[in-house]
Image (cartoon, rainbow over all chains, first blue to last red; front, side, top):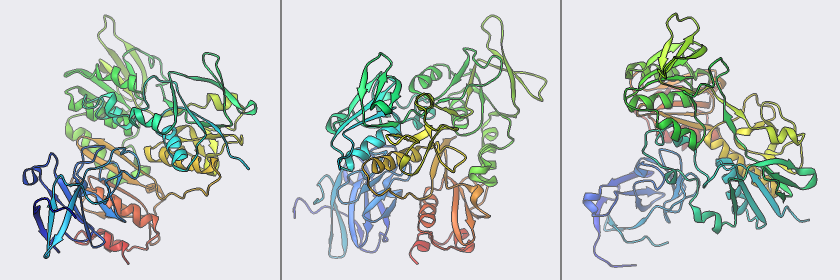
Length: 115
Length: 406
């Protein structure tokens, strides 16, 4: 596991409900896009928030079975790899590493998640 | 037993590209050629009546797949190559320039053409149809601030085009013979709210048919003479959005069973064993209407690929479509006409709300304005056959996802 920096504390465990996501604005992370932090099946994942296909926030998407479905045109992305699972998206979402440390959720913007 | 080695896809819309995509995803490694009558890379059509008309999207923004994808996938894209005839009994097809190409399976993805207005003057140069990139480009140049634009047909394309023209500062009149379009698909509440929105935004809405279009002398626009209205409507530009005609010519000439579309059976099979049909041109046997929606075209491609390769056919859930107008989004799952009663979530006229359609204790349809999560929940509830009760659906304090977890 990488130890680059301590990351940004974005939530306490329990703040982001199962099947929900938190949108972390670009101003907070210094990243080019907002970052969506997803909580699904007990694990946390982070992807660039803006869908690679349209102008939609994936934090508002439907989260299920390790995927998020875009609210706009139903493109689905793998939460872990960011890879598109169906049309209309053809480009992957960038991933960011998330870790849970002492009951808190830490985001490492710009650091790829472990595949 | 060996499967097909040379597959020709005729057409270049979503159904065509989806077929190619699914064939490769399923491991087909033979020849795959996509014949496009239009020039350029295949593009997605829904943006044509939205961001393309608004000038927000250019051709490169609406490509179905990036250019390198065709190389990566080993798909030979023949653009600007209209097909003159398919000859499945001879194992091939003929291009417009006389070139012959061998194919042991032919997938017809020819889509259709926008239906012209069948009245005198319906072919006036001021009258536009909207189906292709070129149509959208031509129309966009006409949607100038202050232009008088008459839109005939208030269904999906007409309503979207009217909203875009209005947003661009045109003076818009929207004309449809139905007082409220789309009721069968989305139900009365949603259809009413959508249609009222046009006049609330400042569009002139008329319930009328068009008798004829008369060109005024001196290039001063056209007059639309309407049934039941004494005064004609003056317009600089007319847009006709009254549906499409399936492009069945190739199928008919080849002797395939054609009846309001190329008739298809499970796996998109036509009446010829080596020919399939996908997307807008196809009509499933036993269905009265063709499924002319974006997702349906994508599903057809997947089903065709599975069928061609002899794989078990995928099963798909409830249908879905969307439409954007006046900054709001309509989404619908299934067909409201299939429901025996409806349940509201949220209040009609209140901007965002949802209508669920029930048959017994099953959800069979839903339609919503600006409620994407309700629609996503509805699709899953419908597809999984979860029994629901009306009170739970209408209770806005309850998360619809809990209905899926029982």
